[in-house]
Length: 224
Image (tube, rainbow, N blue to C red):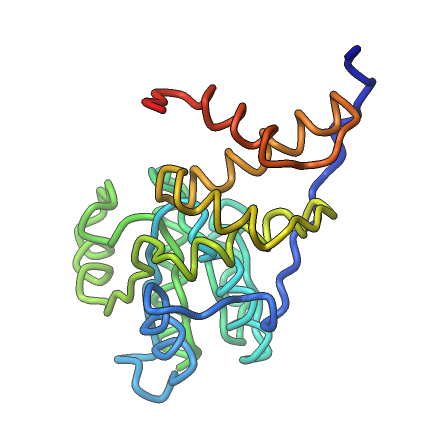
C-alpha cells in the first residue's frame, strides 16, 4: 500500500484533573500535593520518570492553588519577586549556572514571602548537578515525593490518554494486549503510541493489533 502524505501536527495533551488517573504508582504523590498544609516550609519536590505525568500533575496543582507552572529556563533572577503566588517550576536535568542563580533567588523569595513552591524534576535534588553550596543544601533538605514506575492500571490509563491526545480511540482489548507485551515504562508508552499513530497515518489505516504488533516487533532492542 503506498504511503499517504502526512503532516506533523502538534499533539494537544489534555491537562484537566479528570484526565489524571490515580493508581498505586502515583497515589502518594497526589495525596502529598493535595495536602499543602503539611509541606515543610511550604515547598516540595515532585520527581518521577519521563512521561510519568509530572507536568500534568503540576498543572493540576497550580490550578488548584491559583498558581502558575513555568519552566526554570523562562525565569530571570531579576524578575523572581514578581511571583507572589504559588509556583510550580519544572527543573531541567542539568541546570545551567544562570538557572542555578535564578533557582537560588526564587527559593529565597518564595520562602520569605511564604508562598508555596513545587519543583518538578526527573531526579531528586541529591542528584542535581548543582554548584552553589547554599542552593544544594537547601534543595537536598526539601521533601521529595515520587511517582513510581507504572503498575498495570496506570500503564493502561496512560496509553488510553496518549491515544486520546492524538484523537485516537482504540478498543480496550488492544490496550490490555499492549500492556502485557510492551516494555513497562512511561517513556516506552509515549514512543509506542507515537509510532503507532505515525504508521497508521502514513498507511491510511486504522489502529489495529496487527499494526501494533509490527511496531512492537520493530522496537529498539526488541527481543520479541
